[in-house]
Length: 165
Image 1 (tube, rainbow, N blue to C red):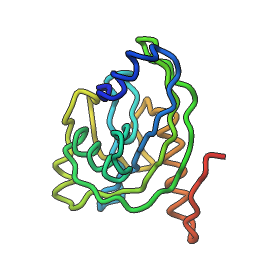
Image 2 (image 1 turned 90 degrees about the horizontal axis):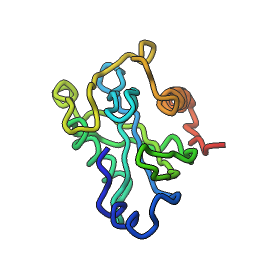
Image 3 (image 1 turned 120 degrees about the horizontal axis):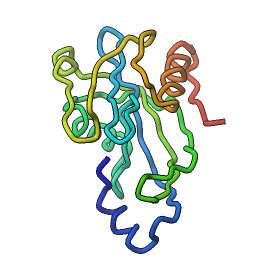
Image 4 (image 1 turned 180 degrees about the vertical axis):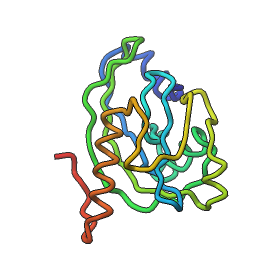
């Protein structure tokens, strides 16, 4: 995963010490109800589209940018279904971070856009649309949890956002 420039600059001052960073992610559906997942290049796990907003960037704008960068996919962001904090992550280079994630339900803007989704950067080695009851393996534990919570959220007539409890 490319490290945003502002984090590289910050790391030059703080070294590998833990950072508390914003994160966005999306469970993106196509018209057939399939979900878009990418197999990450850094750990081989399948996961939803996710990323770090740039300073001052609105979460929805960041998510739309991430979908274009990672999957060449134009999306509409529907609603927040989960706000949660990640456990501390230690990267291979020793950097540490925790993320406050805003997770959204989103959809491809059209069937044509969904059909054109493909690997568009070096963050993924594979990408595809999957039935929610036939997901690829190995699936990132956080992605499994988010997919399950997204399904529960969509089935809830009151659409209550999960607050990472």
